[in-house]
Length: 448
Image (cartoon, rainbow, N blue to C red; front, side, top):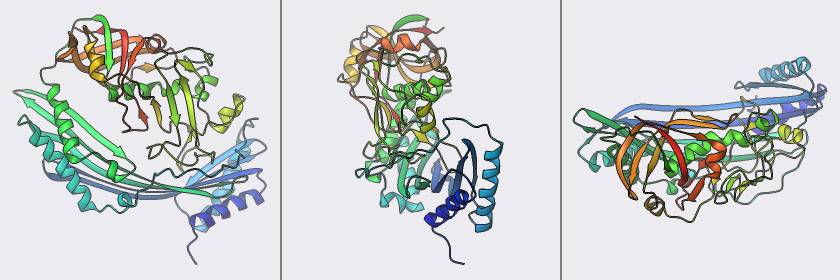
């Protein structure tokens, strides 16, 4: 028997479900190939490879939902999945908002999210890049004698989608990454610093020279770190630390969390919630963006959403179900895989670039803290409280001074956002959640 194409598989499953009495059916098929090589101390430590093909089926019958998935795409298994999914729907509680989106998406512009050079990379190429990155970490300073590892990886995703209302849609993406975790030693003291880059297009990826040297510099900068006395001072987050902070804050902008009163921003739509210097966007159509795609996990066209405009909260992010409950449409933020239901997630969620150089932001602080890394989880989006362990450098007289560790930052998220008094011009996209440097007028440091 001839092998069915992804489109034929999905059409068969969806049609069988509809003929079996469901009102609406959705099929989501995903093909993922992944490979990563890890180098440690100039030796190959690990090579990981995987190839997964899976299908998810969601059905609605009398506003009741059923969902199942499988990686076994043989015809008898697919037929059984249809029957079991319909049976599950019969056991579910009906909900008025249970309905698939039916908005036919228009064609989108060229997004440049697939690179044949990434898809065709061979294992020797990845090994060579990882080795070169590690060698550059060693060459940076004699105190860098070892690494946690150096990694180079690639991933190719292929998504196929159709539902009762929307025609067949598909897209492919590529991702490549290179990173090093360097360890610097000074006597008995050891500190680790890491740097990595992730891109859609191979030519956009940082060079092994820069990746290795940056990781080494970060490790070296931590040597001699001490705690500092508790104080209330200005605090600046370096861009990657600011991105970590923004990632922890994302859930506060989820329409689902707002509906369930699990966001401190509930009830704040249209109101000032941050400094007028702060603008936050979620750009599903960002060219070459790591979260860019033509449509989301429900077939809704990707779009650019202004979340905060110069301090004013403009939008929450939604799927079709949460958007319907809020009396608005989907924002195109349904993230998923074949084995999960759509859930609200970021595309390219970021703070817009400011107009202040990071060195100028530092120079304007007489005494304060420069944060380079956040550890653990310290953001409570329900209560709006922030308390997190951080590492960085002390600022004295507008200049970076000694390294700092073992301190905790604390504050109220609402007050923190309103207290941002500078936004850097150093926005870079190394993740699908990104930010330039951010400076807070005053935060509480819990130190020695």
